Image (cartoon, rainbow, N blue to C red; front, top):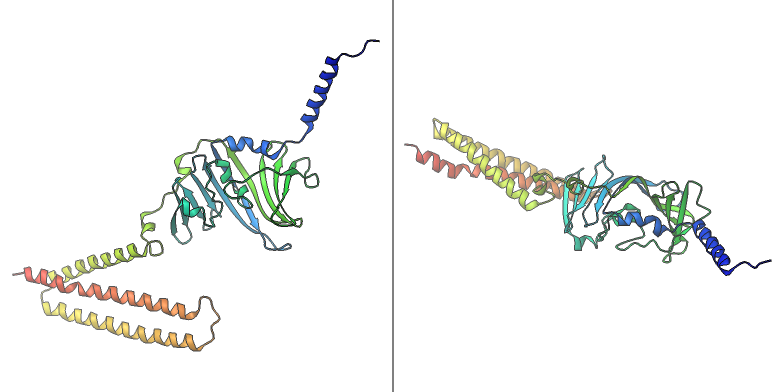
Length: 337
């Protein structure tokens, strides 16, 4: 009987090795490779967090897109006082639609801030909210191993213990049907404390500029909370123009100068009386806030101080409106024959 040749044994060994390799589960890095190679990435989903096991999760929505050149735009809790974050590659912009607050941060400064999801990386997929927790500028997928206890026929869960904290681990969930990474969890002693779950994702779709930036109204740049100096400068200019227009009209059409002067004196009296009465009321509220127990936040004295500042500004603007009448009187009445 002839002995099998060496070539036959070698062929069989290679066949068995190939079959064994084909049966080995894919690594998380190989699954994520198609995302990392894509120039653009978009997603939408839900993130949740709780401080202790047994509590309900605090849930919020998000959606956004990123480009490999560093630009991205993300919405947090869209449709409910949403916060919009975007960058042009040099500056990070944040706009709160609920109250009109707007901020700009150089990227070097934003990298050190606790801005949700921001990382100073260029790969589009690395801006995914899947990497929000447990990963910063260079999130790594090495060390994640399939968990038979958590996996099923529909999905595979890759888990990695957190070396910094005993009992904590990170988990990426992958759908077996399309090998899509759709969920990330942080667990403590087996209990999920934070998670990010995607409802949709796209990799490689061309993005328009509008999908990576956001228009802001010019008034937003000069609002009180965003630019107090510009706001008060604009307010003073508006009062000056309004006062000049009003007093020019009054002096030009008046048949008697004494009539206008009498009404101006009356206006001064009303302003001074109003300022005095308001001062007494605010002083009484200040005393009341100091002698009564404080149970609110912020303390009531802070509210009183804000009221006093607001009334002082209002009085100053009213006085400016009346003061404009003096140079207008000289110009208008002096020009008349």
